[in-house]
Amino acid sequence: MVDGSAPLFLAFVGSYLLGSIPFGLLLTRLAGLGDIRKIGSGNIGATNVLRTGNKPLALVVLLLDSGKGAVAVLLAGAAMDEHAGLAAGFGAVLGHLFPVWLGFKGGKGVATTIGTLLALAWPVGLIACGLWLLTALIFRMSSAAALTAIAATPIAAYFLGSITLAISALLLAALVWFKHAANIGRLLSGTEPRISLGGKAK
Image (cartoon, rainbow, N blue to C red; front, side, top):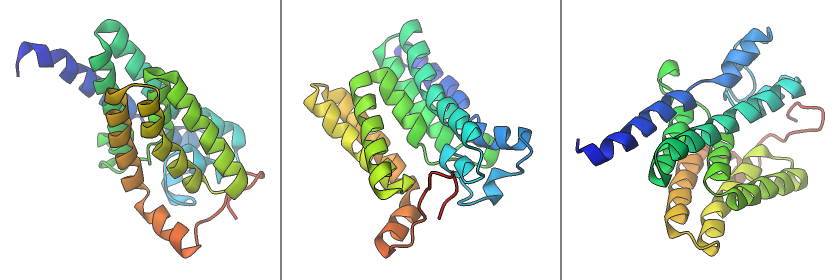
């Protein structure tokens, strides 16, 4: 490995380890709710935590999962440069998707990806947040909201004038869509569960 790539590698690996912290799993166990992987969809993210009916806990998980992406980018960017920030963002998202502690079976990466984008280019992240909220309110399907929001990020980045960020967002979107393969199948068949204001899927 050449010297110039060493900081990028360190940023990636450190952020992967940060991103791989399974906050949803840890906090639901601490709250006495058991193993989140045996509840609802089996996912470790905030949407599945919401299915336990504990809305405050789901919000905490959402903030922590998005926060680990943002923190990884901001720390690497401040300590090194924007390229290290990009490497850190990818590391954090991959850590959440494929955590070494859970046999590489993690979450679906929506919150961590949006947190990463907020730190890389906050207008792109805000657009994703707005589209997620709007789609969720209309269709009451977390997966549909996530897929719509994430798909829009490379387009938003491109029109905001950043080709590098647009390509990065496209790669992140591809990862998130890949992890949502089962959800896409259920959306197409009309069997995808909905979220409700009460916190439990219908």
